Amino acid sequence: MRESSAELRIEEKLMSAARIVGMLFFLLTAGCVWMERKSPQTGAPEGKAVAVEPSTTRPADQSVPKTDLPDAKIPAKVPASPVPAEQTRKKESAAPSTGKPGAPPLDLTTLETRLKETKAIGVFTKITLKNQVDDLLDQFRAYYQGRSKISLAELRQSYDMLLLKLLSLLQDGDPSLARMVVASREAIWGILADPAKFATL
Amino acid sequence: MNKRVQVWTLIVAMTVFFTGPSQAAEDVSLLKDMTSVIALLGLPCGQVVSVKRLGDNDHIASCQDGNRYRVYLNPEGRVVAQKQ
Image (tube, rainbow over all chains, first blue to last red; front, side):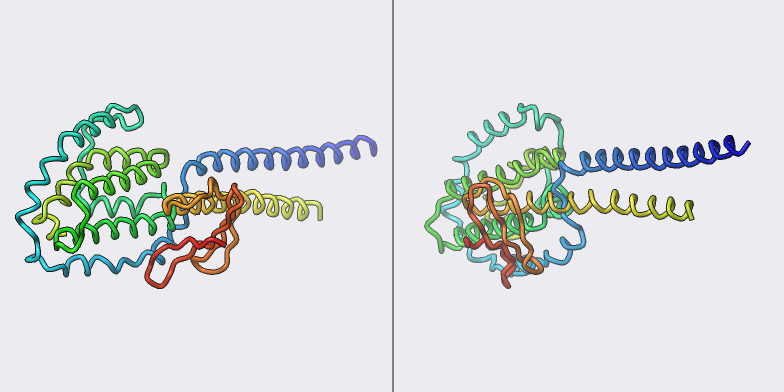
């Protein structure tokens, strides 16, 4: 009688131990699955993003005098770029990674918002990208004010390079935004290359 | 007594399993962030293999190729990577 009750107690203990082991195994598996889902994204804590990204350049952009634009030079240079740009655009849209047709083009403000919100890029990377976008805008401003010797073709090169960097960062973590950037490429260039539109930025 | 031990075991195990992966994920994302920043700035690095935090927005990143950079946000709001 005593033996059987002792056996029952041991059995109970074994069962509870087995339950705990099972629970731990489940938690371990769940943890691993969560890590796999998390790993493709380079998302940094969102609180930090809000704290470190105070943009002070936008008001400065708006305060640029709109009357300083040299009208004579620009229209002659602008038509030179659309044909090769169109070809590169076609090539990219044919690539499998950016396949979905009909992604709506973005304006600069929407693009800025989407880039701020995406978790595919870390906080420091976002700030670095923003710095480089600001630098490019400064170059455009200097060009339109006649303060720079840089040509529109060179500005186009810088623009393409920056967009490629952006796409390489987005294509794995946020492919839908990458597609939108590709779709908006010419629309954004259209704004940058037009002094009247650029002045409204 | 036995029940209490079991409960505490479970609590400790859950804490370890839930906090461990989140810390690791944060570290991985910081390594990727630093790698992207250094690449964007056009500096040689390959991949960042470890990051030491010096302060808010101030890190020392050690690269695969042996380079080390102090990556920080300067007062003008620019991210700077300074070779160490």
